[in-house]
Length: 151
Ligand SMILES: Cc1cc2nc3c(=O)[nH]c(=O)nc-3n(C[C@H](O)[C@H](O)[C@H](O)COP(=O)(O)O)c2cc1C
View 1: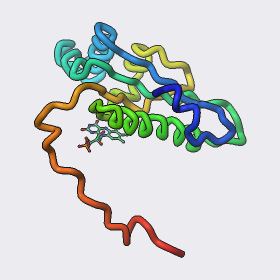
View 2: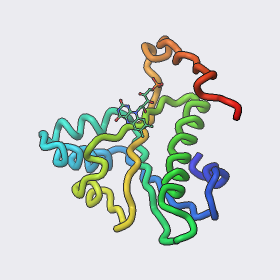
View 3: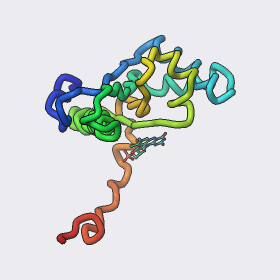
View 4: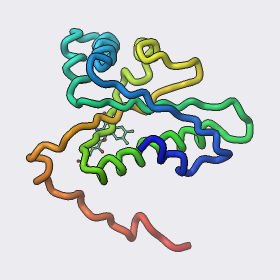
């Protein structure tokens, strides 16, 4: 699925993103950093990070270029996160994109080994879909008169 991200919209093809996968005990590192950033007990953070068997960390890895502003590079990384969610759904997995104040903290940056210019867009928690969620109501349809207009 990550390989499929080669074809998402990407101005100048910079590929200004990367994904750090956390499974098994690697999730505990995330959990400890969540706890430290939130000022809570380590167990609490670890329990949060271990809610799903796979946690995908979505990172913006910006290139230093005047031609492509940062927001466009962030839009590419955001496209990756959204597209992965859709592909996961299509393949039968449940996923949830989560953020929170710790995402941009120093503690988190260190725990995940981010480079100087890199920053997080959050985590996609991936796992099975519990029965109760399979029965949940679909989202409300869009009010297209608001979301699609003609000039
Ligand atoms: C950038 C971003 C950050 C998000 N962070 C959170 C979060 O921290 N906690 C949360 O409950 N939902 C968060 N969401 C929303 C969920 O990913 C998801 O869209 C929402 O729970 C509805 O999911 P559903 O349509 O499958 O019910 C975030 C969404 C985005 C795009």
